[in-house]
Length: 308
Image 1 (spheres, rainbow, N blue to C red):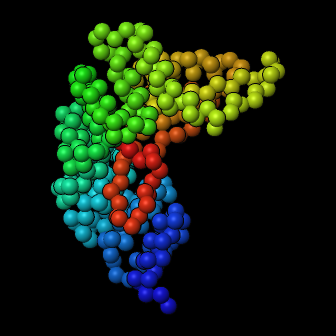
Image 2: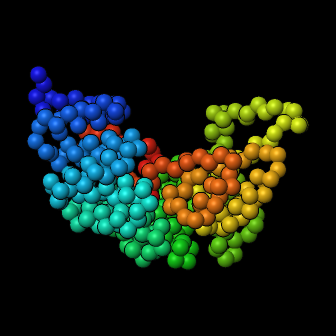
Image 3: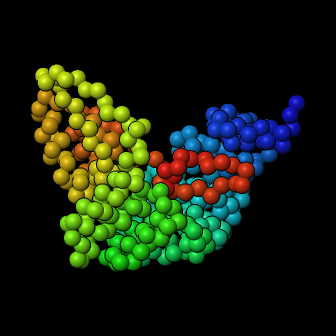
């Protein structure tokens, strides 16, 4: 019979290999047969989180911090799960506990900054992102989010400088490049020709290389077929995109066409519900937008889109 240490090593091997269901099962077996262990609860929570079982993940992380109140990584993961469940106040509290016990945990500061930014607390967002960069000077994503917070404060030159620094550190960052182009629209003296060139440069760098992998669909040429229209946005809510799109979607419902909305929005509100009701088909396309601190033996526990 395998010892607890051997079983844990096997569970970690499954975890590394992406066999999350088997890892989860083994972590649970270990906890049933052995003593309560904060580290095993933490790993179980991480596996459940990667599987999308947020309630189980939260319960596991909470048990981990009960057993080990200074478990900064567990608080960071707990904050991520709470943010994914649209509980920003609880997420902020968890991230603050994470940095209290792990003041060198740059990812927790990054996550704190992202959630604060989403709540409109831009001063706190700027402070958290700057702290993440102090800890980890090559943190491209933290530079990008610092730029977002500074842009929200109207500090466009500083924001643009952050986006450019992010691109120096991570040249293939389509999001940092996109934010830089977006920022240009609000800067005095920028011409239409300059904006067009900036958008063309983004397309050339990030879109053109993907064209070979995205063949054009073969549509039914029948002009009398039912038209299907897709909409993709992270702003289906109380946002200009939401206000502009909801009436169009409500109007299209009265015509002979189908609408499909792909929503990349984490924060839901009453406008989100109205848009969802107007859509013929609604698809949730959002992923985890936080970053995980992870044990050194673990490969990334979430997809590359694991930011707030």
